[in-house]
Length: 222
Image 1 (cartoon, rainbow, N blue to C red):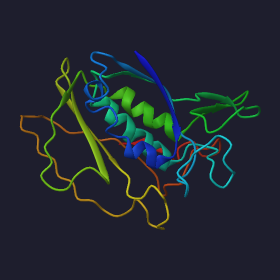
Image 2 (cartoon, rainbow, N blue to C red; image 1 turned 30 degrees about the vertical axis):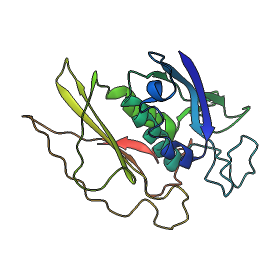
Image 3 (cartoon, rainbow, N blue to C red; image 1 turned 135 degrees about the horizontal axis):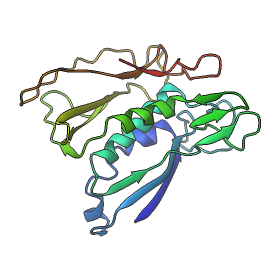
């Protein structure tokens, strides 16, 4: 099993959505699996395309924001649709004492009397709560990946089908209404079903983030 670490800009995670497609065959690693042991968006997209923990404050993220959580989610979709390759994933850094931290952003911040799950945490929470046992084929009849990314799964014990869709319109965030342009989406399931439920992770602005005095700015909503 190989261990990969990725700390980068949001565009890198979007562009590498298909990193694990046919990875074993293309790299001559037959039957080799992968643990993505650390990954996180750590900065906005920069002109030179290089993200660093020492990036200037104008580029570096202090808290995970909605746009970074979405980019991480797109990357995780790509891994989830390749379970024969990617067996485990773990975001990092995970925990930080808000009053004495070594790096940022972090998945969860805390003080002596409070805990702050971030936008990245809630993105992980969604994946942890709706897990399938098998991936399902998805046939798209209009458009292609970007600005929508998706994966479908079935949980065989409960016979529940999960369709996970992420929308990210403009990773450079140079357009004022970035990510707010409507994209029509219709879904047809070629099997009987009894009910439909949905949960969405969103906020009013791609730059929104959770803080101690507003812990539900970016939060899963039914």
